[in-house]
Length: 108
Length: 120
Image (tube, rainbow over the protein chains, first blue to last red):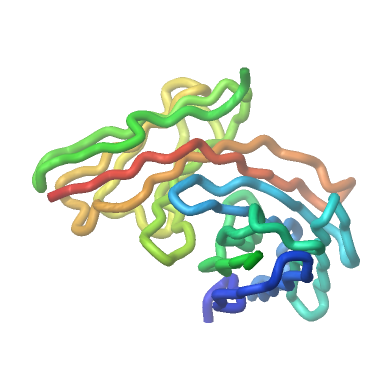
């Protein structure tokens, strides 16, 4: 079993809709969870970090964490074409374990 | 202007040659990391260093070597022993952030722009 698994995608959503990305992890002792956005040909950019159960909102992004079920999700509200990218879930102690990523395409 | 720099952006080498990728940071971060990314895949950890003069192997260290003589610098050498060296190489750095008493720390990692290595 992979340490971090993401829904495989690709995910296509219309502009203005909600994009929902899911991630599960295997290490029950994990404490830190991150979402990175990676545009094609570029390096990953940290967009959200979450450490406690529940929701964390930042602008149009909401991260949700459920440690009992070992999943973390990312919602992108009012999706824009500029949100088209690959989103990487990462789980951490002092070295990150990454999922393979979910590619999101927002169609106008 | 704080950040992480990697050079060069593109690198082409012949098979059998060693090549060194540069990574420099001025964020005063203690920890630095090297990842490799292949098309359509996530990032895989090659080496990491939590303090100067100390580093540990990651998940795919075979065929690579690193040094950490200065806090700011963490160069990666791709040796001729690496069987499939063509990839996108990413350097990252982080500093600990306390999550609370008895909980531990988190390490938000920030990435450089990457070096795309092609070996023919």
